[in-house]
Image (cartoon, rainbow over all chains, first blue to last red):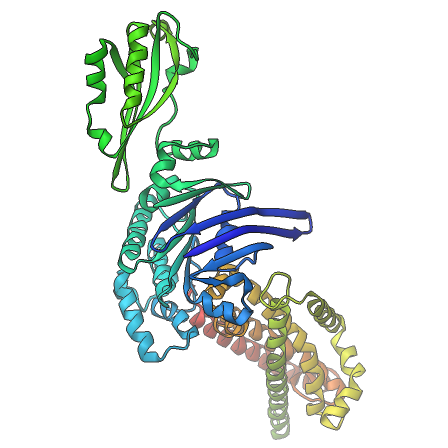
Length: 352
Length: 217
């Protein structure tokens, strides 16, 4: 549905040149909710604006729904933009128009008749649940209501793609949730492809299927949300994930030296992550029974990434070193993520 | 007060109203588009053209920095060309308009700059052309501020029109100088001043009222 190839964007400003995007490649499939996450200044805003050419890439090609936008003339580009909806962090509604008139705006631009516009707007008002607010002005609405108007306006021309530029960043958590629900709903109902940029991992976790992590104008990691969450590679990604899933060790480990290799009487500290069905298997208890070792749980968490359960456990195993190694090999044969955090001297924690 | 004086007052009031109304209309007609061009040709705006922007900006500044009384005399040839004479009420309309056009342009420019660029971006994302952005986004969004700016222009024109007497334009200000000041008619002076104050009040309140009605923020 969307294909970005080798996108470069260089700004010339008075204080020199800014290389905002350094060769970005992205492919978004029809019907996906694709999230792009990055810190401010990472280039995500520029990137999403390249998709509808609000920012014209310095190099590279942008293809949306089979049309290469980078090769189009101004007039054709405007026609194509009508098929790409966009919503914004600050809503960007026309303050001089009522809710009804704001939603009607893109239809006016597309030269629809009054009757067609009316029919469509009434339908959209219902979809976003604002039928009773149609004659109010944006200034009279709450943030969440304004974003609903923004969404209705973006959907007016039956777009194939919806771009969300930090659409929930100015909203409180409760409202964010309801807006994300609405987006998910629209995605299912119309098979609408959604690309969103955000700096909140929560948003990615709630609704995205695919995620790309952008840093310094480059995509540093990309894949299915569940994979990125369970096996983050880069530090930036790990940091984003740690904002909602604790990947750090409990504080008392700070004062304890972790050894990379076992000694005769050291305990093994492991991080186990369970995805999907493996969360239902009694792995720990069978391991304890089989190898005659002890396990104490230092940290545990079970979360859902959309409908998939996803758990993390940090355990400390103690017992004969041979048994510990056998247990480790056993765990490796199961369907779960294992990370050896290190070895600690027995009693180290008690002493600390 | 004599019948004669009353007739003179009414005539002067009409002359002022006429001069201000016509020059106000002309300056809005030409100043608003000029203001729009000044904004939209700015760097990074929808019709970016920095050289045109710079030239227009320089012309506007030059006109605005010329004292009105000098402008009035300096453009006498232009006035003669446009209205056929260089004296009288109609002749005064030309310098009044020329002085007010750049004033309106700057006021419209600052009103349009207040429109959040995000709204323009949203319109672009919906496939709006520059023309649609100007007529459907910029002007409606800035209208309350534009109305206030035009109100200010009309009030300035009432002030400027007092100087129109220098080229025989007539009007209340001229009456106040010739009768009230030069002939020591304190009563005439007082009445003209009161009328001028009332005129300014009416214009300001009307402008405020319209602007408030338009403002949905």
